[in-house]
Image (cartoon, rainbow, N blue to C red; front, side, top):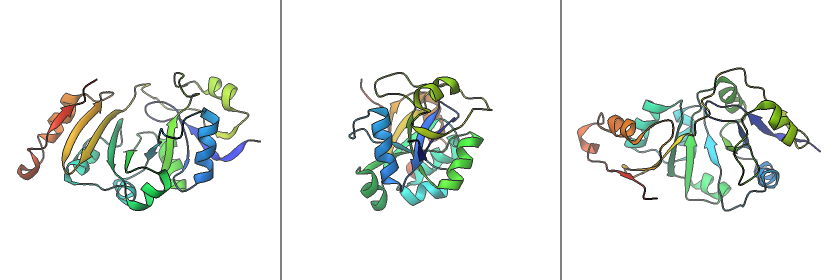
Length: 199
């Protein structure tokens, strides 16, 4: 039976598979569909800064980065609000505002969406509508065809807490881009550190 509460949809980076943040049953089904281990948490897509603030703790630096790079291909790892931590079973949450009208319209309808790439766990993400329908069409009812341009680039991933910044993964935005944005911050937080994660 096809799941009506799970959505496969294009974003400005790659296709995502997701559901409402508050639909724990659908989240469990996504883990099954992807054969994904439950110790690998989902990111959350939002449509606005206000939505992000509802689910995560946003300090001055993270708000600067949100305003600078979102909507866009930047995922911020932020301390989770209590209700978010309870739902996802995590203390931090990856948040992003996608720059894609289909994704944003879905989020406006459903609220924040737990989302991950469309693939079987361990395989490369799928980004072709027909390949996705072929592999997941028997399990997911709502699969959206992409009518707009996507970059096929992964989002950059940045951890922010207490105005400290760590670049965990360079993607669409480089560490240099992020440092330049931080340099524009007001004097009291200009000392925030940007540390590239050791591989």
